[in-house]
Image 1 (cartoon, rainbow, N blue to C red):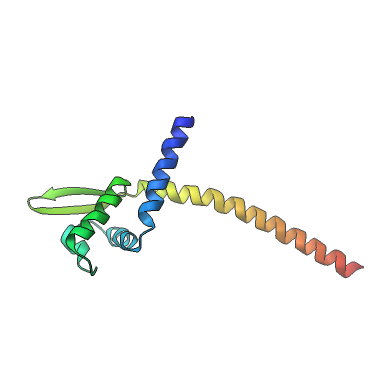
Image 2: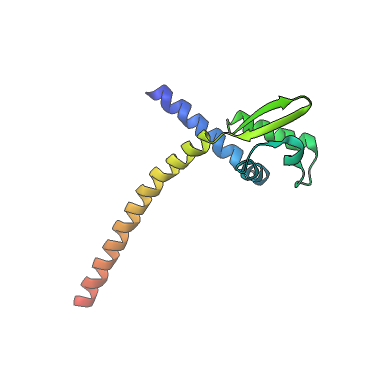
Length: 118
């Protein structure tokens, strides 16, 4: 069980680390619309093709991107499983904090009513 958690955590770390960069988030957003060549992915950015390739390698290493070659053209597609894992992790903590905030709101409301009743 512990090994599974370590592996799960390291995958989450890689996902969040990859998504921490705005260029990589923009690449992920573009790939969410469908497969794309590296050249087309690079077009909207004011950076070199080697810089885009570095971003793609980070996304690939995090498991967010799959790449294949068609002749000389490298085509990329989004792999959504790591995003789903991150969303599930966030959802668990969102539920936890929503419960805590609901309890705090209830406590504050009860405290306000007690003060008004004095």
